[in-house]
Length: 464
Image 1: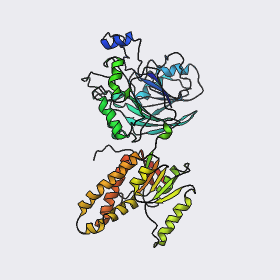
Image 2: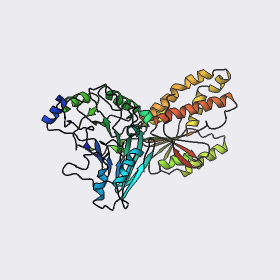
Image 3: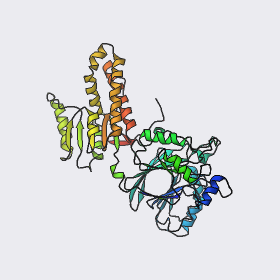
Image 4: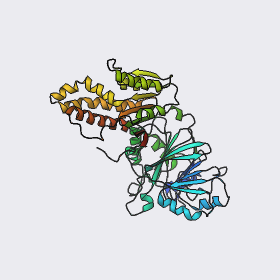
């Protein structure tokens, strides 16, 4: 993935053309000027299209752009006359413009009846495929914290973007926004390659707007690291900069301590080679015979060497169970190897090739057996069993987060039926539901399979 920073400045740029504060004068003296923030990804995807985008520095053009992603309709992020400039060239290629409803509405009058522009309204939580001449890219729309509480609908509907490029590298574009919780946004728990992060207000802390400053920025960066979205190799770059910040050399020094870079306009970020090393994790949920195992296997179908981790054992005294196991084995590629184990933490920590774990319900059964849970339940030790299993479940979630290879996990969804009639059934239902939540929180993606059909599950906005 190649990202060109077409602009790294705020609405008024930096220096502000009407200002002679120390910050603006220092930037002028250094011959530095920042345009409103925008980024060009692989020459095909433009993120934000403010007033300076039509007037690019020498040597750059937008002729190959096939998709424009708009974060919102504020004028420093959207100058719809850009579309008129394109109309005048009578291009044959379709241009897709994506964004919140208010931003899209501002664009419609700038194209003619025979336009090759197509508009797409987006909202937080949506995922879309961006077809390009180089192949498919992906975009996940995330909520921004930009609303000011003053009825500004364009700010209220602002979004952030997680873009997965054709080569698999990922960019988190996070301007404009105030403080946010990565989990609430739905950000992945595996490292992305590049983060462009709002740093508008510098040392001005009483701005009362949906932006970050030098007091709130470190906390957001720390939360991204704690969540797993920012890793050791992730490049975090401050953007949407204004004269509220100290001059660039001082700003660079201060942000370096938290691992954030300050780059000039037209800087190029090239992630070549970084995406292949990033593992992903997926949890597949479903009921009995829903097709969840088949779908899990299909996600790793192109991987030659896969370790299939079976958690149910062989059960030589159960012919029906042996028949089930044999059917599963026959449909898996011959190059896959099978490992019978319930020590999933060790398996995940020592893996050197992709893993498919099927399933967590049988893993939990083994943990309950190991803790003599059924006898203890008869003895009235319900809460003690729950307390004893909690560290084991948490350890599994942590192992999924740090797993060095791609991992797909399968589990039963048992919480949609009636409450079991027995105490043992209720204990199992409660613990498997909790296990699924812990593992889902550790995974990049969670899918629900019902009657052979798959649904992507977004993170719920809850904290309990």
